[in-house]
Length: 590
Image 1 (cartoon, rainbow, N blue to C red):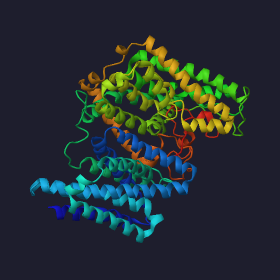
Image 2: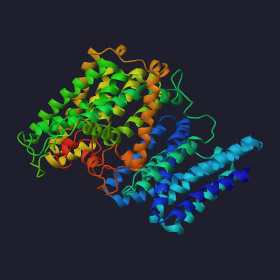
Image 3: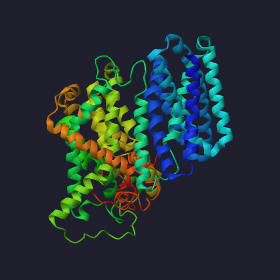
Image 4: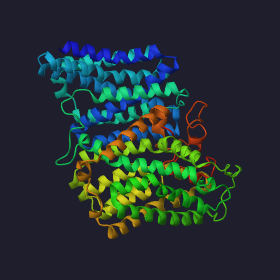
């Protein structure tokens, strides 16, 4: 049994490079391999390897993984070549240590089973478990290493796996296990960054994007279907809901609000004049530009309806009022700090001119096309990722730890975390609901809701380029201070009991209309994913201000790019060349 498991482990390593060799220099197979890598590797890292590391060394494993991801991102940002070389070496070293421990684990697992069905499950799991390692090395590192060096390194991984299998328990007892797990967790973050980040443009062909989407889903399903001692999706802390128990129910419960928001976005686009929904053009006052950029997320109809469903009317009203106050005060402070209270730099683009009046039927068709196309594409990824993150926090976060943070401290931490990291309104609402459910204060949720969608590191960089470092610093500091102040006021005015109970929402029997909406929304999400492809779909979470210009075959080549994939534009046509603060959500494409 051990010999078969080790052999399949090495075969799994070799299968990835074989697939890359077969599809090399052909657009469709390479797009499919890219989608397979993007679906398989991050899922295994986040659903298998990282939970195992957490079991071994505790929650610090998550911090080490995040540190690896962020450190490589910053290194690549400053020196791209150095970052890529360093990332490859760290990722390979972590895979080497992991292979050694994997071999020892195989020996222990093989000794614990006596053939039969359990042996076959272990053998199949080993094959699928090692395939992403070879696939990620070949797909991401082959251009830099070449086939010879890739073969040598894969051979080294195979030798280390064999060595670990031969030593077995002796190896596990003699190695500094905790230190190795820390290094592996750090390497997992580096590997994640290398897999999800690419400097290549997404596929131009619709067929290639669809192939990449199908391969992504296949890899995702294969990773989730791997047998294990206990599925991470069925595990929950104490009496909390597991991911399997909460995720599907949350999707069904929020589907009607999500569809209503998309419909409202389409109607706004179709029936409001272009000037009424567009962003300010060049020559607008700096304060007006910054105010619109900060308040635009609160104007998003879809986000507001989702907030009503998950957070209730009082907290949603506090979010809108807090966002308005934040926008006005930020605008005044930034305009004062920039020393340019007058007009912003004038744009040479011509002002939008409303087209000829269209019939009611044409406007309704345009509304439907907007709702099922650009409006959906802007928010789809954030909506699903927000639900998944909410389900993960529900299953893993200890309510006692959240309550121990306290009201003032929780508000401050929430504002500090939300300010540099952009969080779309559709993604922030589920997270805020879980925060309140776990025992964090209402003010902490409001701080996340007002600061997350309106500020980000990319917005600060845009402000620095256009208005100077002083204005960017004023924006950053003021965002944190004002978000904390708004959160503390919300603590005094909004009772936690006004927020719908999360367990009741998940356990409630859903009406037939909710199931119908969920089916329709699921079909729309799948169509959006296939239309854009996985990379462009997930890139919309960060905005694609740095993405390459779309080719003629890309969907919404003029319309969606004009929207810049902002989830807070609520169907309003925008100008990508407008003043940078109006594109506050843009960030480098993953």
